[in-house]
Length: 231
Image 1 (cartoon, rainbow, N blue to C red):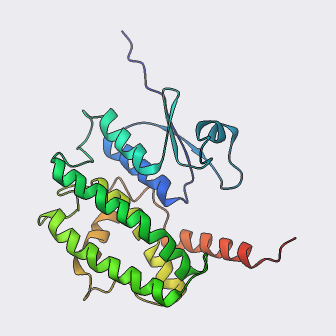
Image 2 (image 1 turned 135 degrees about the horizontal axis):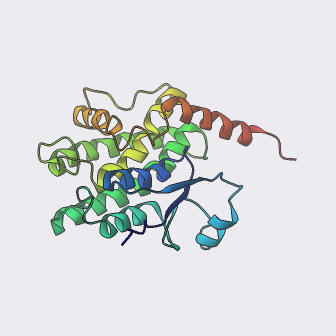
């Protein structure tokens, strides 16, 4: 009997770091999928139909069933393809809870702070910088505890928290270049800096994550649109 290939589609943007979360998870599990490029503000009918609540990517469509929300999709992939690759979520219930806690923390903190520093969002830049540096110190300590002497938050290989934090760290270098402020100083954050180097050179990550130069182009495009006079 012929093996029927599962239908896996991913709707997202190659310049989106939250889309890269899903692509990394699919790569870790060795799942074949069709990628459909989306553009913010010009969403396809398929995306709008598949994500009726938020109307935004990424969306995973597995055998006709849509799943929304980047980290929800990552969990779905881990649970659906249990026999492929290593587990993304920790096997230990406590470790799993800790990974989810820090994921919620970085998702609640990093986006708005980076947007303020880059100039995408109104806010006190000095306060945002203080908050971001304080968060990095907490994550430096968290890495030591979570990694247990290994290369990643997830241990020997990329895990749930690595994927979540890695997407935010993608904006660190562009933020440094735009602001002229070095955020990831080796003397202050040696473990995070080493972790990030391991992370972005990982085979599951490097081919599906936009480069710093590509993200800087996105920054310039967004800032130009924000500075343009209203018609």
